Image (tube, rainbow, N blue to C red):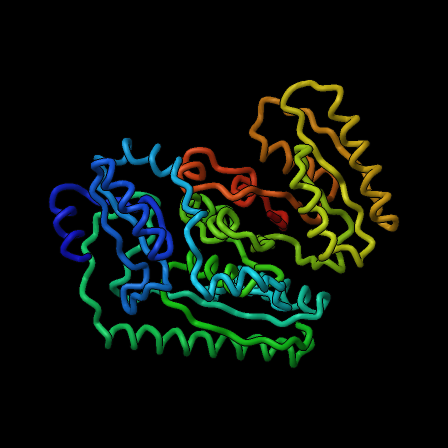
Length: 385
């Protein structure tokens, strides 16, 4: 595998076009090569590669225009699942656990504070996760990788892991101090350390363990500009089926039990009813008013009738729920700006929305609303699939 990669890399810069299980990566490689596009596969985890892990499919950069249509039209969902995956698909019971990825920053502490109170509300546990890079681990890039993979150095790896274990112990001690001081509810929690790319490890964990929710922090405004392409939170939102709470570092410290108004964005799609039901699993016990919000991209008299109809349906389904609807006319401003203005003018405590899973190329060239709101707003965001 390494010889293939080295040979291709000598001729042209390699780019990653997909990340799959080993079996699916092999199938995609065969399909590309059948179309005269050389490809190699490499393990995401270069320390301990194993067939159960994730694998990158790489091609030459010059082959990218020809390869993209093939990849877009390749459906690998038919691939036979392993025995372990079959068992998981039969038993997809949601685990009574909230996953909280942490990088030991202030924004991660805000996420922890929100998550602990959410866990108390839901009667579940907390799983802290920190994902680290070894010194020779390649940086995650959306398309191109011009690096050469260095041979593993076990001593360096052990040194990094030992430092991360110490950092996690400090983090756990901080949380225990907050619990002892009454600043956090007394919730059972534990932690794991993973080596790899943060967004991939978080998504993989959620696929395997099915936590009730993921709670993640987001940076301040200046940091968001830097992290626009590579934000871990944005990648998790795009690639994960688990509900994700994104808590801005600078957002007012409000928890679900303290919220009064939630805005639910709708485009009148069927999947939004499922997303609304999932949202109610989190907020249904509180006297929160829900605004159904639709942004008119063009004048359409039927949109208000649709909103009123949805409101009537939801009030029958949830008799104790207070609702209202708001039709916003889109002016010559970006959609995220229009929505954020509505949030500020109406004192909305949290935005909720349904978001479909989109492949990496769609995400890069046409970022979804959830991603755009993540980088624009200082309001907590709940994204549901």
